Length: 513
Image (tube, rainbow, N blue to C red; front, side, top):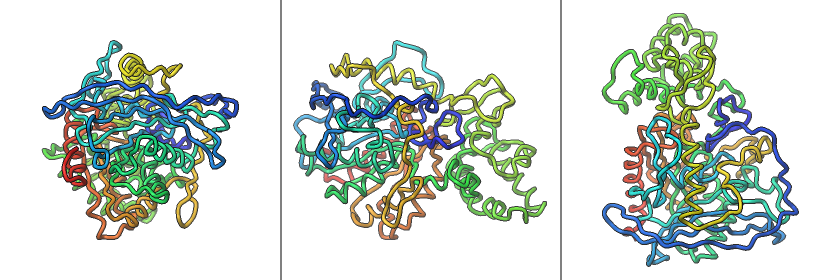
């Protein structure tokens, strides 16, 4: 969930995928050419979980698979945890590969927060008290629809560069896509899943990976059945931090998220009973009157400017004076600081329902992301305890929830796609190619209304502007939830998301397996 290091963001999260960490500091060496090569091994345990009143027996396998380069030399060992339903026909039983993003995040957030048969219990929209934490059965697991494989990116979890591997083999947009593709092909070979229906579920930068990976796997002879994109980040050119920083479309795409946040905190000057209806109104204004005003630049008349200031006040809750001083262009970090400044509170970036308390209430941006710091402790503690005590897996060290210090500024953001190589990622063309060449590929897009890391309107804009043939538009479906970047932190949103995904999977299968 984090974003680009060259981005102006408080917690280092617009570097894309799991904004659950601070910006990288000192970077240890990444050349691991002398690292010993471990054997491929795993720990398998038996469990059961009840989902919708149905008892499901399953095995949990925690282990590693080795990756090789084009010279057949081992370069990496990737850690995974797989949940497989007992007794299923593997020819018909779907399998889903899940991952968070970063780049530089493990998949602990999806693993212990969303669709695994277990999840860690956390407080909703407020900090969770310190240990002990509870890891309990998850009634919203997707295990009733699909087997699940949670994969940790290189340098996270227990995934490590080994043998002749080096950081440059993994730490880049295309290198990362290649590594995950190698893992999935290896997993399908080892466990006989080549002929199973296959899905990818990525979150944040994990959606960048998933879109690129869908195209790459297809080129390697493995077309997919479906993609689930959670809190998407697909086109860096229309987001803050991308050159040039002041693209007008970016302000337009963030406006509905500001409206949703102000509505949640009751900071709008007028009451609105229906959030979806209000947001549709703001979408239309953003691409109409607001877009026209921004495009006028210095030619904007005083009367037009006054009209826009009034509208933005109504839609954001910010004062007209502040909006005027900002030249009608309010960045997300300034909004998060300004909205509740009178109460000396900031709103979270990953999830604007969370509130922070800064030392300097007069500053320009939040000093930390309130949502980020609220969940780090429960997830980090729970994954280390769960793997050891329940899955009986000993990784020999502490599980790394992130590898940001390892990756640091060395991440290669360049991305090669048909037609050229982009200096920063835009994988919408990868997705268009994959869907065009495999017209059966279905996509579900899930977005939280209160997410400033990957705003929902930006996702809509990208998916609706990638040039997909009109005949294939029906293959994309959308879900919206009153939560943030990790919408599953809110149980109501998780329940609705599970229901929506159950329908998504069922449409691709004759019946649940």
